[in-house]
Length: 208
Image 1 (cartoon, rainbow, N blue to C red):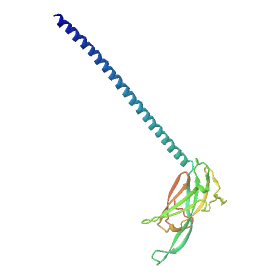
Image 2 (cartoon, rainbow, N blue to C red):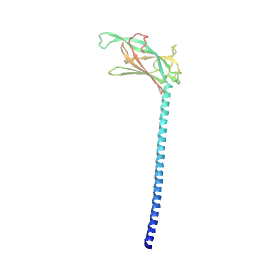
Image 3 (cartoon, rainbow, N blue to C red):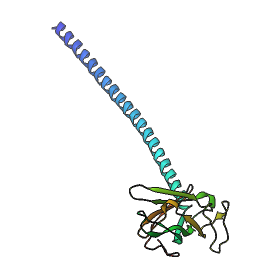
Image 4 (tube, helix red, strand yellow):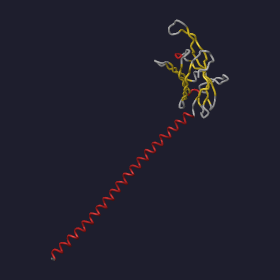
C-alpha cells in the first residue's frame, strides 16, 4: 500500500512539474511570437515610411514642374497672314497663292516669371500622309514690341507683356483649305498649341 501511495505521489509531482514546464514553454512561445510580430510591424512601418517619403518627394517634384510651367508660358492673342506667294500647283496646270509667313501677337501669362527671348522656340507641323516640321527660335523671328521696337535674344519679357514676331512657313506654306499645328515652347516652362485654319490667303486675315 505504501509503495503504491509513494508511486502515486511521485507521479503527481512529475505531472505537476511537466504541467509547469508546459505552460512556461507555452508562455515563452507566446512571448517569442509577440517579439516576431513586433519586429515585423517595425519593418513594415519603416517600409511604409520610406514609400510615403518617396511619394511625397514625387508629388513635390511634380508640383514644382507644374509651377515651373505655369510661371513661364506664352499665349496667343492673334495670328494672321503676313505675306503670300504665288506659285505653281502640284499638277503645274494652274497657279495658286500660298501663305508663306504669319504674324503672331503673343503675350506672356500673367503669372509668368521673366522670360528671356532666347528661351522661346516655335514649331509648325503640316502634312497628312507625311508630316513636315518647321522649327525656329523666337530670336530669329524678328521679335518686337507692338510699337515695332525690336527685341533681341537677351531681351526679357515680363509677366503680361504683349509682343509680336514673324514665322516663316517654309515647307509648310499654306493654301486655301490647309491647316497647320502651331506650337510655342518656353525652355523649362509651358507649351502653347493652336490649330491654324486657312480659308483665305489674304494678308491680314486671322487664322485662329
